[in-house]
Length: 297
Image 1 (tube, rainbow, N blue to C red):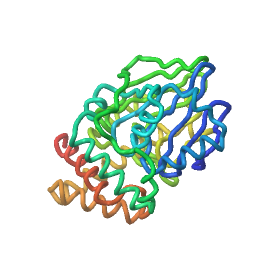
Image 2 (image 1 turned 120 degrees about the horizontal axis):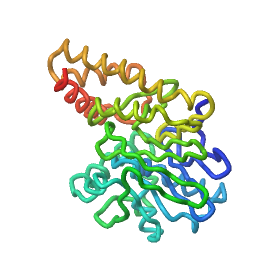
Image 3 (image 1 turned 60 degrees about the vertical axis):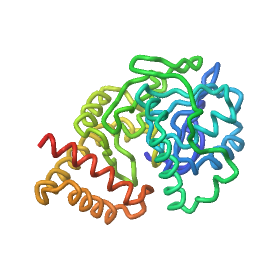
């Protein structure tokens, strides 16, 4: 079952934000953590939901960023500046990206573009939300564990969607926070967004497959519970195979990366006209994927 409305998932886990972009609040006996940084324009929703759900802000000690893309780090600057005691955790490659002036410029630019596309361009004006070079924190990597008191997140490095992607798994709850390292649960599909290295993306899916999962806590389009959660990685594996074949076939036909990416983007939006990312941004994503595939064909 796919659920896309903000609210309590289970006793100590909440989904916050909107359908197209969400973050999670996981609470342990000792402290709490925000998982994922979301799109910047969901910030007012997240703050209001925390009030409505009675979430104890003083208990939040960490914010875990699962990868550095702009749509997964948007609320980070506000929370770090407003609550300096919060420890922002990310992978070493992600921290390198967050230190690059050009990357910061792109994150702010793309965040505003998507906010405008969703009709929320003015909603962030009261908040100090833009990325600058003042955000610091802790590096996490493969094998690290984040102990919240009776709840423990196990960190895995899961590249493919991006080279800086990490996944968090809570074994007691069987909750998987994989960000876009697995399929994006758009409508009734599992969109396999292997942006940086499609082969690594497929290898990551195979690595995650043995995990016992009862909650797929996605960053886009909500979370999945029940039987579908236990089979979603398999669904992602199959959809990744299909998309790889489709992209390879288009590239073989046209023989040009840019033309192939434009064609794939056009087809995607014919099927998914209300997808939250604008076509110019997503065309760049498809260009990255086709470029990788062209080298391995």
